[in-house]
Length: 391
Ligand SMILES: Cc1ncc(COP(=O)(O)O)c(C=O)c1O
Image (cartoon, rainbow, N blue to C red):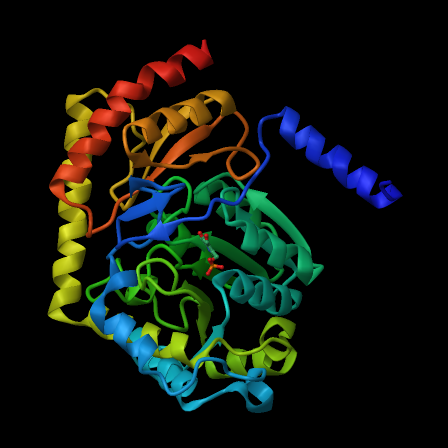
């Protein structure tokens, strides 16, 4: 016997199922940075954000294992903020040339909390149409008038903002998570440089990769030029967690008013130590070598796509997309890829706009030349499935 609420939930799920968009958990065993076992079968994965392969780096794993404690036992303001957190925040502040870095258990929480709390002090929030769900959730939580602007259309945004003498916060990403395109820095800079306007950049996919040492968007903007930068440690760092890098006063405000920071157990100390080890690697000659290897892999992938006439979108970053179109076509091609030993998840609406279901291919420095050849050949061999379903 279902309760009235369960019946409503059932109906909502049924609608999703009918659309072929029901989401399900898949249990994986990661053998290393690129290979996974799923339901007893081994695949090469092109669906993780482990861009530099640090998730399995011995120095990162050792730092996690050798940490002084696993759980942090309390929220940061009670007794949860340990030496491990302090050290990581200080290391990041120096690396990014910001007054302060505040740690969150995820980048999702960092965005919701920071945008939700700081957003209140602006008259309008302007989000790029492709901004991540966490930014959208934060904007909604701020209760401020928020709008979306056409993806990277900074000229028309600048015209709109010219007519208002109100305080605007413009929210963008350094590298867009589903398309892999890079922030139009010139356009963005032009908008946030105007009086009354501030910028908020989610550097989830740029941190660790962009900038001379992987210091991401912070390499290009001073703290005065860019009010908030949010970071994710589950991508190039290969661990998990998030942070914001901000001026002293902004940090103090968040420590006092941001519910996601105040009322949540601090990330495990062991996690903070692992992230520290990752950041040291980013700053080292090995970090440079891994970034170069990633660039080589991206170039190799793109060359092979050109040879095989695979219509990938323009992106020079680790996120590469093959837009398939219909949901069914994307799912069918993703399943066909599995038959060939490739794991590449189909991304469907509502995560991406309607009609743009796709294969989101993420490349890592850890992928071998042979694995990339295997991928491109498999994409070419399975294209017919996508095309047939789309017809
Ligand atoms: C642009 C962007 N911001 C934030 C997040 C959230 O990161 P986390 O997984 O640490 O919550 C993601 C994750 O997918 C992302 O792509």
